[in-house]
Length: 298
Picture (cartoon, one colour):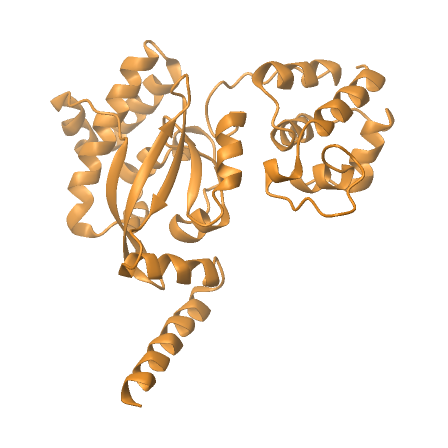
C-alpha cells in the first residue's frame, strides 16, 4: 500500500471534475478547480473526516467497498479504478459484470444529467447498477442481492411479484422480449459463464422461459413502449429508450412521455411524491382530484 501516492492520485482525480459534471451547484465562492473534499465524501457515502485523512496520506487501508464507492464518485475509468486498488494494496475486482460492476463513467455522467426524467444504468443481464430518484420512484429500488436473483429477467420468470410492474395482459409480450434480448446478449458474449449460469437456472425454474428459449427468437431491446403500473398513480404509458455502452455490457435507460399527455402529468406528479409512503402518495392524488373537481363545479 502506498498511502502518499494514493493521496496524490485521489486529489488529482478530484481536481479534474467540475461540480456540474456530478449535478452539484458551482456557487460563487468556490476556490478549488474541481470538487471539494466533502463533496467527494458525500458522493461516495463516506464521512468527510475519513476521506480527508485519505487525501492527507493517513489513516488505515481503505476497504474494497470504500474504493469502489470512490471510483464511482470520481468517475474513474476501468484503468484508473484498477490503479486506485493497486495503490491501496487491494486485489483488483474480479467481476466484470453483475450488480457490483463498475459503472462506466460515460453512462454515469449522462445519468447525472437526467434529473427531470426517470433513468437508470443496468447491465446487459438487466441487473441495476445505478438509478436516479425518479427511476426508483417509478420502478422501485433494485434489491440488494447477488447471483441470478440480481437480474430482473430472472425475477420476472421466478417471482410473481416482479410481474406487478406491468399490466397482466402484457406479460406474455414482455416474456418474449426478455428472452429474445437474453439470447442476443448470449450471442454477443460468446461462451460466457455468467450468462450460461443464468440461462441454466432459468430453464430449471421456469417452463415458460424454457419454451420461449427454444423458439430461438433474437432481438436486443432498444426502444419500447411500456405501460408501468404504479401503486399511487396507476398505469403510466411511457417510451423507454436505451443507450448501449461501447462494449454492450451496460445500458442507460430513460423514460419519457410526450408533452401535454396524461403520462407527462403523471411523471410530474411522480417527481413530487417521489418514494414517499404510498398511502401518503395516494392521498396526494385524491386531494388533487378533489381540487380539480371543485374548480369544475365553481
